[in-house]
Image (cartoon, rainbow, N blue to C red; front, side, top):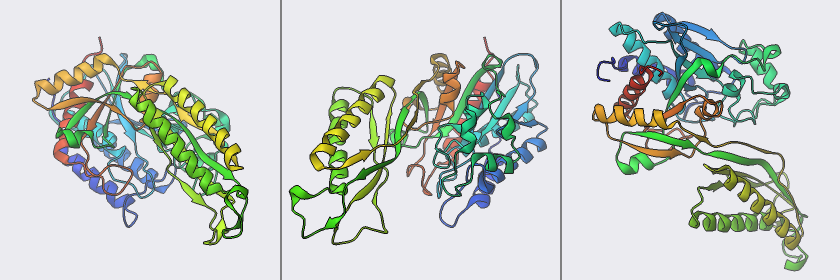
Length: 419
């Protein structure tokens, strides 16, 4: 694939710098979904695309599509892209690197006069980070018409305003939400570039990775333990209804289940990302009568998720009786696992070898919009780029030299004919 022109890395560097300037919050970057931060990022990409003479369009959910016309406009297109929102006080590369990579590829092709066989579309996806709205893959699911109408009433976590209000404010059309903008049969492949959000590539000393699959998740975002407030010195152990102790026992029991299942070969990660008492009522000399927590469970295997959910429910019931409290786990949300297309994995591996790029295969522990495309039956692949210092924090540290290698692989595979 050495005949395929390389990406425009100067443009990529400029876009990354402008994204940081537009969304810097004093410590990290905040590109709020369906808010000013995400909106500025979408506008930047649209302006850049128009300067490259690409077609620019939107769907009812205000996802962005940037199209380089191919020789056969009737053929199914190749797609790439990612999300442009971030978590609050996050890093500059999570999500955005995939959109910048797609634009850099098309800009390099434009400069070299390279015309692909079929259209190539870069998608800027809305609201991938479910920290803003409690719905996984909101933008990409909306593009396929897979978002129910009642989602319009979901409240954004910070503003408490409805999704319908935010969507309309960004130029979307709440009345048309649910219409499918993307038809799977018209998409030959979807390949997403993303920073790795864990340490695997860093520890392996490799710049890029070929993703084998994306973990699904089950989540209880707003679980509560309800006990009874009491004096810390006056109530003996057997008479207490201590919500914090019960919550801690649940964490310990679930952690033991995780360790056992992992030892048996199950793919599984478990996180309690929030653990707190009510600041209006907690005190040094009080037994806590209420505690809040969240649970995030992920696996490449759907039966493993269901098995673990059963264990979680059983542990909560056992501890509720033993500690004289009540567990309210609340609504369950989550997403299904997604396997990446074997042929695209082979193509990425072959292209890397042909260009002398050291790469490895690895699974994705984090969720990505590529999962939605795979679940719609579209041949889907992912390229990971090495990223030090983790993700979902201001310290993301992707080297542009590594990005260049990942974007080169992306361009090679997007240029392959769909046969």
